[in-house]
Image 1 (cartoon, rainbow, N blue to C red):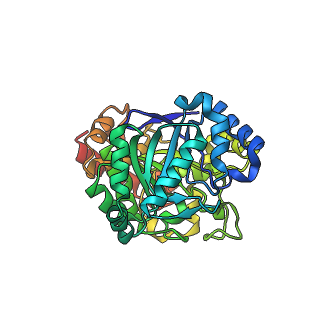
Image 2 (cartoon, rainbow, N blue to C red):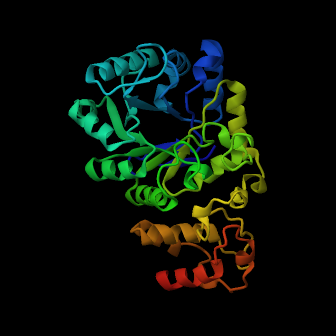
Length: 364
């Protein structure tokens, strides 16, 4: 397992976390085995917008003794009074749901308290008017909530919330389909979505990724909006390559699903290459570097994807990106203009010309 650090909280978070939409289907014993397998494999971050209320006793049984070693992302607005997942912004309902979750999780604190599923501006307004945001602030002040975040599928709403409140973590839906304008939650253009990634990287706000497989559609050619399937590993790698991303949170139904996710780290580099998405005709990405590194190997030893990422972040105002660029062993100034990357880029990016542009921007 590899880990990434949230710059605002200092927490070291596993690159692969775990979502809980389907874990309840396993039942208590198998669910505990699945969580133990995740923990033993290095997973330490868990999203608890669960598919059913029966999920929480599974966590309580699995991690009561190891609570301090795992991070829980708990959503204010997800409620389970009917057993199955529901959504409510009623203050009393939210309080009852959170209290029940804490009891069944056998914990008295929340690592990341999340404003849940704010997809429209009217939801954000209601969240404040109903007193839920004030309730979260009270819990933060008392130490019950250690860090704050929110989840959304909508770039416009995300920008508004980030402008108005101090947030440590964002949960956003990221996959090649959504970034290409394909799928149910493909809100915002690639440019609008990229601005979210870059802003979070610049401001030190960690991104945890929901729907990395587009609810499984990207894994099935008959359901994929592209008419072709990707692998789980390609989708995970794509999400981890976006600026600001700390952890990808796919779901798991049992121990075998967990082991399949952890196999990501056993794959050869070519199995992680997601540049095949260029053949799916995602028009919005034409001429845009998506940091896939399909242009490797560079004869001059440049990490072209990383150089592009630091350039994009620096232009967005990320001072640290400029410093990170300067520490690279090989920089855009080392480009020989051989054109190898231009020929290999599946997104038709003139990378050799872009290296000249980057060299001029950074001065090296």
